[in-house]
Image (cartoon, helix red, strand yellow):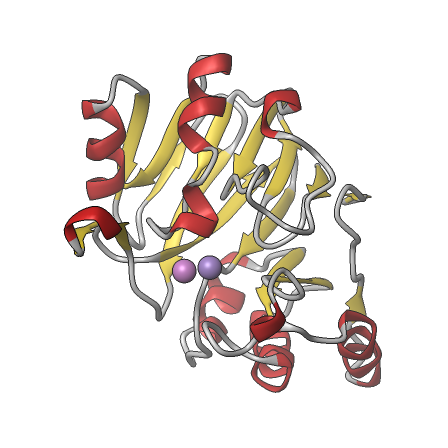
Length: 230
Ligand code: NI
Ligand code: MN
């Protein structure tokens, strides 16, 4: 399993011979070094309907004929827009050709914002996701506050890698993420959802140093960097 971080929560997981993209946010992403037009994906996993997680989903899905994997309402929305989709529910898992996907709870919200009519489209529950394949598993927490069932995620799914938001304001901050890292039991933790905007500015290297004090391997990937899970 190989993981590439593009900044914010956008991540490519190469597993089982397929390219699985999580939360595509490229062209409007101030820290991304990759353009949406250069991204190749077979599947796109979306954790929730906010703009900073879905921005380039439709263009990448269309150009690559990729299947969008998301919770029910999001999947239906993309199905109605002519995309290939696979809808799931929180807590549910499914075996795809590349490996296994399970959606986990996340404490956040999920809606599509329509500024022109000052309204929101309800997009179901926000989620985290566990992607497993070739004996390795990744927990991408999506946007979430800290919740104690992360212990259960650790007990049940033993993630090798956890990608946890540390930006604070919209999600957990570094203090909570440090607890989340311990609860998930992940061997390696990679911080996400920080430094994209001034309001979520954090020190990724300091977070990694705090992880090390707890005996956890941490890596603050820069946008465009990859990590091979061995
Ligand atoms: Ni969000
Ligand atoms: Mn977000």
